[in-house]
Length: 141
Image 1: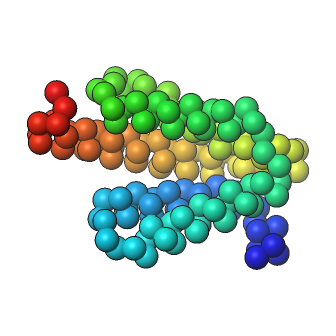
Image 2 (image 1 turned 60 degrees about the vertical axis):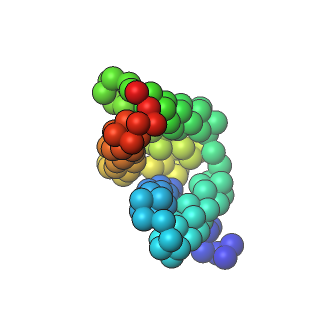
Image 3 (image 1 turned 90 degrees about the horizontal axis):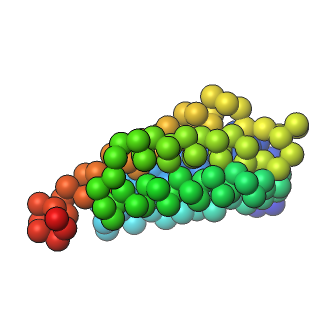
């Protein structure tokens, strides 16, 4: 396992993180199909371990967590689309600068943008659908 984690580039780790989160979203959308959630969790843990091998920039972690917090806020209450855009930009910047030593092991901009947009826009769409479902059921106003 140590060799597998050490052999992953930061680009591959960010791609694995995105795929893992997408699988977890799939599991949350269709509860009971255990395999996607289990594989997603394993993939996320593997990507976190791989990024940890390269060193982690704490500013990037703060950016990612702020993006996640903004997206979570949109689940709890109606928010403007600009907030989702800001969360997506924070995710992109955080993923881009995630490795601590960016001179040798950087996440390429295209990978960071693709994964950040997939996570940010995908989460934004899913939270808006969940919010609308809660309103339709009379749980929220």
